View 1 (cartoon, rainbow, N blue to C red):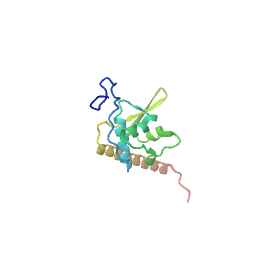
View 2: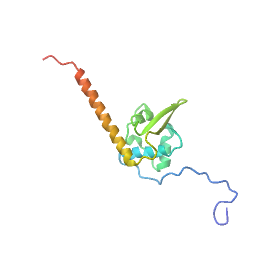
View 3: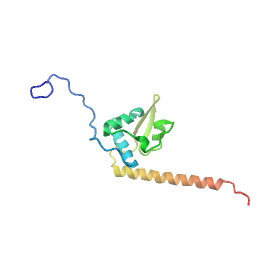
View 4: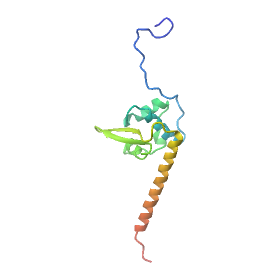
Length: 144
């Protein structure tokens, strides 16, 4: 050890990991969770293998990635779940492995992400209403 209490001068440099934000509180609302996912993926230098998402989330934010609290993860796995939020993340495959990355610009604000989420939800409601209207219009009319 160095006499001043630091590392020895001939010691190898300490391993430097990407600076994570200070540990944060677990999200209370879906919007907070989506923002957290965005922050974690935006901090990655390249698309992240999907099976590393939970670990990257925990390392970056300092708390467990409880995706099931906000999104239903069914039998088809995390990939199928994340496909339902294409306005937040995008998925790609390479050599049989699935990767995840941000869909929005990395420097987007939380408010902008919330607005993008609200717009996506409005569009889904509109599409579902149109689909239901078409199904109702095609239904046979019962004879009186």
